[in-house]
Length: 451
Image 1 (cartoon, rainbow, N blue to C red):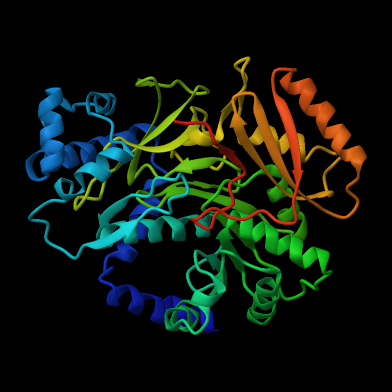
Image 2: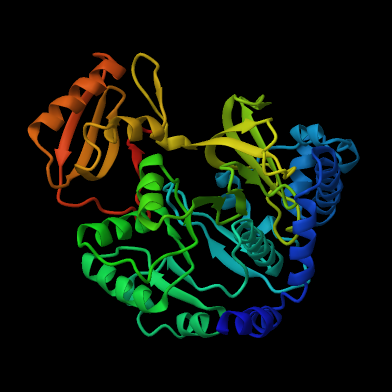
């Protein structure tokens, strides 16, 4: 079969051509390490952390200056808890000190990259082949959790427009050598979805991968037009680059009759966590050290805080205690799947997506999902977006579906009033469509308050 040809011949050749010659061994090591117990994983992390901090102090001007300012030396890192002695890295630090953050004598090919800018603050950074290999092997391990192996047909909605996809030779090469169908995931029109459906119908993918909002809208498109999904029966749907909300998961699981799992990460640090078949978000702890902190102090399990990430394998431009801008909750429970990897109980959202009312109520994106997708209105709303104009004024854009009436608006007003009280004004704005951000993503919640 062609997938076996891809797995055993084409895939290894492609990785060899890109210099990722240790990929088979790296994947093997990852698959072993996931079964380590917590103490063994922490021991591995500490060894990597100490090596990285020593390298950063000796070879990278930015970190040497920062460590000396705070009076920290590599010899001070004797436990994972000691990472709290190191300064936090903010996006603004990277913007202001980029030239000082790359090892001057780093041997290897550097690639310039940028974040998507979905927070409104895109940053430039440098990476080498190790980051790509880590991300790829983490993804391959994740696929194997669901019984999907290298070479399986995969349809991907990626960060490209239809114009950028058209005639793209790299996309053609991906289809031939990786069994991967590349589809536009940004600024996708109904006509684009029609074209995507035809291509996917011929391709017959085993995996659907893509930006969460695009996957969801493609599914809505297929259902509304009563498309036959006879040839689109994947074993797994992978939601990526944006949160996966319950109403999105429920619709896609019911439509494709297969697991819908989420990958969580950031372009600058790679895949932070992946959802296992038991619905636990396992952190890729072999390659990353992830902290959750509040006001600089480590959070206990169940407490909400900001995510700090240290990339344990990336030496050309390390990210040490990098504030990714997201808020999450750690879990100290073990997963029934048996893996020893740490767990994120919940990814609450980006700090700018968590709204606060005048009375002090804190509203995460999931609050709005529960409100706007409650039983009385589910199926009558195609899409929505929440915009906080002022502390007390919130506008909700709604793209209505068939069956939406004024009664639904009255129900939503009453429901929100009972949950928010009378100190928050809610305005409904009915629109034909909701435009994506400049990054191409659809943000569910936006705060227009000054930072």
